[in-house]
Length: 80
Picture 1 (cartoon, rainbow, N blue to C red):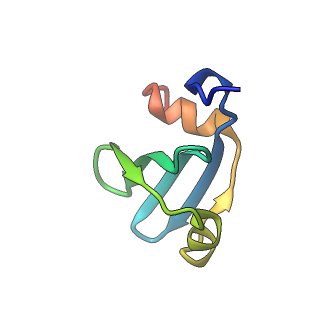
Picture 2: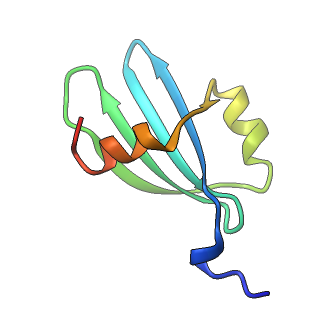
């Protein structure tokens, strides 16, 4: 079966600290992610991120926890 983007089940992660919040939508097949950074005092920024094959361990070490895709999509679409 081909690895098309329509067959991918994305994984979502979130990290919160004093500086703000960071949300990730990870493509576990292509090792890419969309990151939304929401600073405490500022506008959200979105960027594409390249990940390594051991991204789960890396994200865990950086303090990211699995989260709900609903929150990510609210921020992505500017509804929050």
